[in-house]
Length: 141
Image (cartoon, rainbow, N blue to C red; front, side):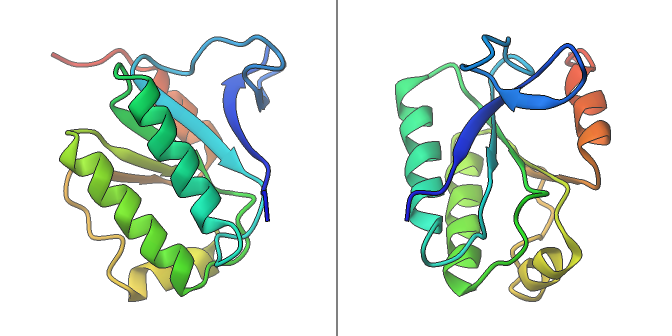
């Protein structure tokens, strides 16, 4: 299966759209922002992992990854394991995995698996609006 995975940017109307198709700027410096329009399961998890790993290898300026997860309705054990590997990979690179809009059943499954342990390299936001507001804030330092 080849799920639709797009890098998103913010359109003038406030919606998140395909950044490359609409020629939109990145949401924040050093950030890869993706949306996968599929379940995170045995059929799609490898595609998401390949996409993120490939982008991190091709673009050394990337540090953080944001997954706009509201389209993800379901997650299975393969999806949980993939989520954990991605979190670990991003943490080892000194980055943060940002997840926006997890649906409750997906969040509960990840939580039961211990995949949502906050370690400073994982941030969860309830809505895309909240996530975008955080991403727009200038970096402290």
